[in-house]
Image (cartoon, rainbow, N blue to C red; front, side):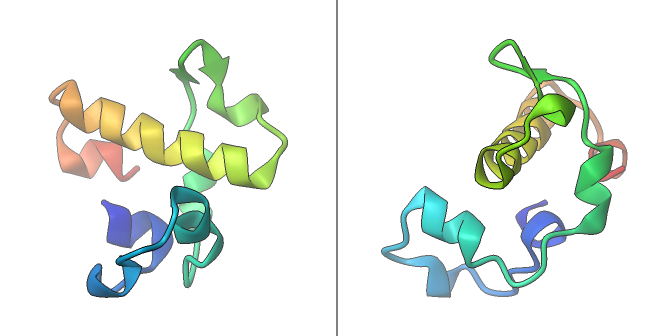
Length: 77
């Protein structure tokens, strides 16, 4: 899921990065991430205008859906 969303091939290069750096340095943010909708912590993902915050919430939403038992093929839109 993280590879699909961010384009990271190896997670080893991420050692020592902050969450913000992880998102900012993502090789390719999947354009289909714009299809991620819904609420995370009471905030609508599609309504967020700050790019870094939106990326954080998009990843949060995918994790939430997986944790709720939604199949991976549905989560990745």
